[in-house]
Image (tube, rainbow, N blue to C red; front, side, top):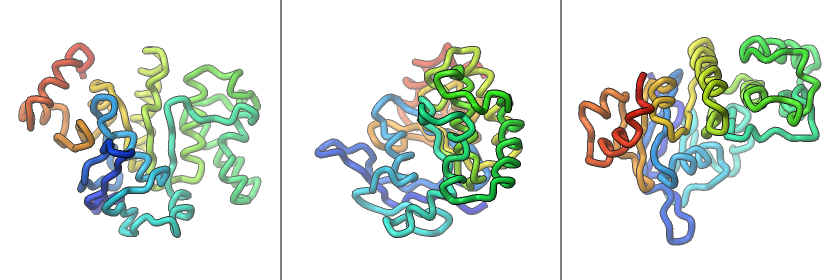
Length: 247
């Protein structure tokens, strides 16, 4: 299986502080990969480099074999969906208009957009009757479903999710975790998800990338990390979340 995303010696610093040390990393097609680690470890920076919100200071990032540059970034972004923690919805637009924002910008036919909207409502279990509500009129879980629908609207090859469930209460979060897992499996979606929650990482991810201080510390399943920790930090990180890691 070939990689959809490849980092080749990619690095990023903010002033004198390195956010991502020179990193080689590949993300396979059709697989859900979870980036996990303590705050400030570089996981969100890595995601923002892939989507082009940040430029690497060194090295390159390849999408489907093509190096991401300022010249092709806008075109490549149409092939990537992006979900952030608070949803990033526009408060002055209805749920419907938020979902169809990019499709409308690209002047997709009205019939095609309506069909896609109905498909996405069914996929994410969002009630079509609520599409004309504004974000403030939706629950936190509904807002995240709208954000996910918007990210999936153009059938992206890659889905990036930056702590999408972090602000939700436990019951809503558990329900959305279950739905996300089913959606990824049904779509055979290539997805990269950032979380700080080990249980969530183990539940959603086929592969876990544990990071610390801008470096990849270990890659594998939760059992790999438990049974064969690459360093004392791996064991320390797992033990710190022991109560959450019941899978």
